[in-house]
Length: 89
Image 1: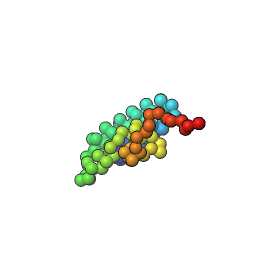
Image 2: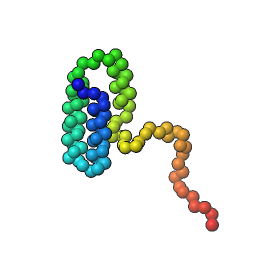
Image 3: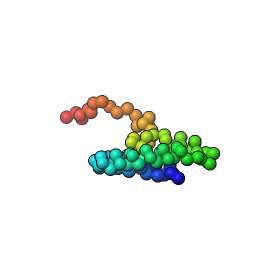
Image 4: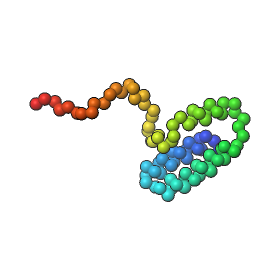
């Protein structure tokens, strides 16, 4: 049985390998992830909340999330000026 945690860990490991420039390991992990996802899809579910859990997990692709990243509501930041103004002399 392949858990969501295993798949999430593989996504994280791929990101870590890519960030370190380890393309060989990242490619190997992608193959392992593909096998795990196929195995997960083939397993029957007994959890009536499985669809809701999967939807919550799949909100954003793992490659968009890096170490220490978090979802930030950009509307609270406000506009960023296009030009930095120097103080008067």
